[in-house]
Length: 99
Image 1 (cartoon, rainbow, N blue to C red):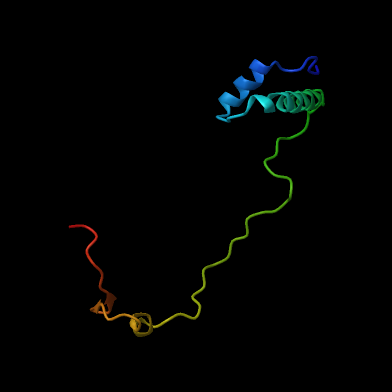
Image 2: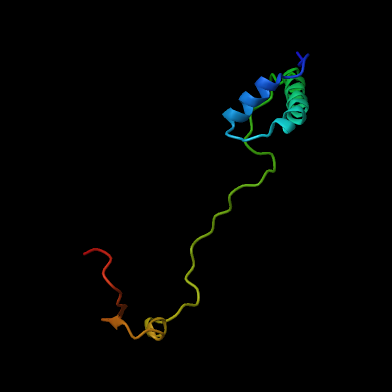
């Protein structure tokens, strides 16, 4: 069943409030028309017979692709620590996070 009448200014203001949107009174007429169109479109979609159609969450056919982790070229411990003066026992030495 399609929407037969425009939304009232009060209804548009209420929708904006629920969506936490601030709209100017000069914008209400524009949103009345747009919301009317959206509601009509949703009503058209409600008329479509979807019995026998399986629900889907995506339609691209893409699937997650997993691979094994591989160790690649990396820095040696010495190379990693080469840019700091603050090191101790082969590790970075930093200020304590917890006292």
